[in-house]
Image 1 (cartoon, one colour):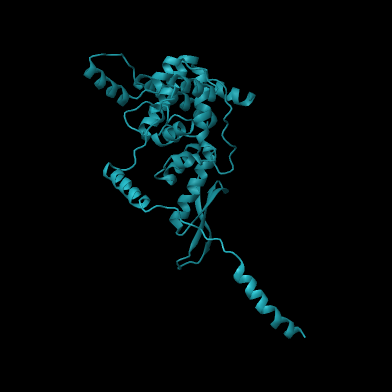
Image 2 (tube, helix red, strand yellow):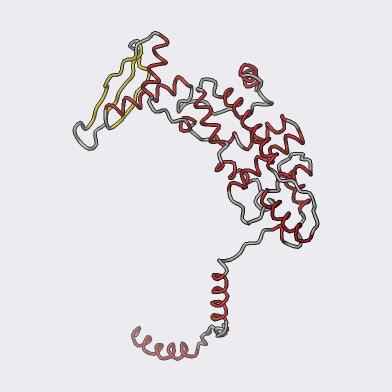
Length: 324
C-alpha cells in the first residue's frame, strides 16, 4: 500500500518541481569596468602608489578648532599660540618659507624645536626625581635605564599617536614618522609647562609617560653584565660571607639537565636560581638576590602612580607617597 502510494506521488512531485520558478542573478557589471580599474591601478603604481592626503588639506578643516578640541580632550589649558607652535614641525616651516620666497611675501613662523627642548629637559628632571622616590633602593644605573626607556622615540611616538596628534601636526610630508611624533609630544609638554606651570606639566608626564611602566619588569631596563661580582661587592660591605651551594640537579649529563643553586649568607638562604649548567644557575641566583636587595623582586608592590606635585628631594617625596 505504501509503495503504491509513493509511485503515484513521484510523477506529481517531479512535475511540480519543474514548474517552480528559479531566480537567476543577473550580472550588471559592464565590460568597461575591469579595464578601467586596471588602468587606474596602473596609473596609481606609476605615481608611486596611493597618495594619502592629510586632514589639514580638507576644505572643512579648522586648525584652531582642532587645537582647542585637543586641549579639552586632555583636560588641559594650553596657550593657543604655544600649542600651535608645538604642532608646527621644522620641515613645514621650511616648506612655507620656500613658497613665500616665490611670491615675495613673508609671514614669520615658529617651529617646535625650542618647546621640544624645554619639554625634554623637564621630563628628564621630573622622571629622574619620580623614579628615585618610587624605587628608592634601585641603583642610579637602573634609574637611568628606565628613564631612557620612557624617553625613547618608540615610547614617546606611541603616546603621541594615541593622544591624537598625527592628523594635527603640520609637517612637509604625510604620514609623519616616529621622530616627528615624539618631537611633537616633547613640544606639547613644553607648551603645557609654559602655559600652566610645572605642576600641571608634571601630572601630565606622570599620567601619560611614567604610567607606561604599568605591568613592566623594571629589571629588564638595566643589563647587569656580572651579577655575581656586583652581589659579592654588596655582601662584602656588610662583612658577611656569601656561599653558593648546589641544592638540586635533574637530568645530569643529558640535554634536559637542570641545576638549582642556592646562595647562603651566614648559613641563611638568600636566593636560589635554576639553569642548564651550574654557572647559569649561580648567575640566576645572584640576579634574584640583587632583586631582593633593590626591592624589585617579582612580588614587589606596584609602582605608585599617584605621587602629587614635584618631589624636591627623596625624603619629601617619600612623605608624600606615605600620605597618599
